[in-house]
Image 1 (tube, rainbow, N blue to C red):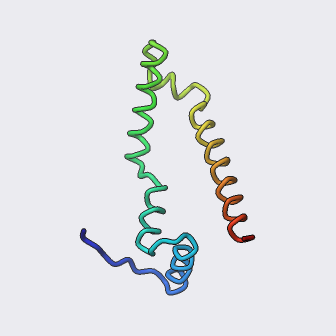
Image 2 (image 1 turned 180 degrees about the horizontal axis):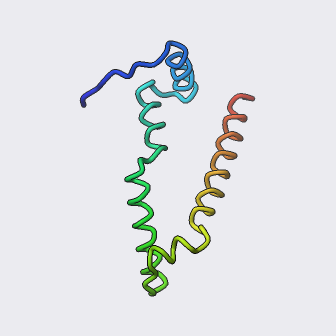
Length: 100
């Protein structure tokens, strides 16, 4: 595996190192995990296209992208709710770990 160097301030490096230590991972693993959580614009567009195609297949009606754009963002709201619940669960789990 090829590796590279990323230049950040010492404070940022120390902060990331502390986060990695708290999570039981290396600094490189932490950076990879953080990067994986942030899809690129191309990845978001690809996911949106796939989601729309899946919805078209499920309902059996050809809905145009314009019609999707005009509709309420149901999937986005579901993702938002799921992300909020995941963050709350992670916080609760970390809180139990700190109390132990």
